[in-house]
Length: 175
Image (cartoon, rainbow, N blue to C red; front, side, top):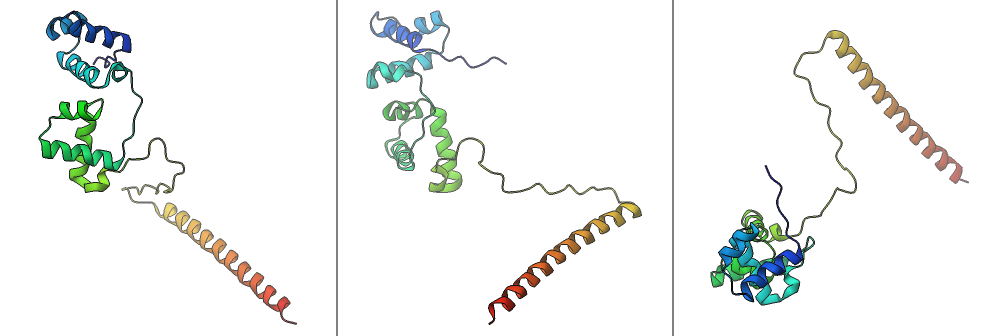
């Protein structure tokens, strides 16, 4: 499976100018440069509406809930296609809007809330030990019980020490 091709700014600009300034057809320019006609058409639409800057590579952009809702409402009320919505609202890809639609249908307005990016700061849940489906031997059962009793004993000792420390504090406070 091949890797997705990312086109640089100069390449996009030259293709767009071939069509607009040299009056060549979309198909001929797309075929000559081995790219999809739909990509070239989108680049031209963005270029016409937003200028050369719209062809610059974009970093991952985050959108507000209000903006996402505005886009989805415009698509619904004005019967915009995904491509038209991308050009109108300067969204780089139709797949972004498709994701918003799926999340909105599944979770409502909360589905449009931006998700935190990257690795979580701290892990809150520790993994539970996997329970084995095979039965334990009598020796293994006894070892587990010993471990459990030791833990219980240690907990009771700590609790007892806390109670004693509290009693000592209370006796010292009384004059």
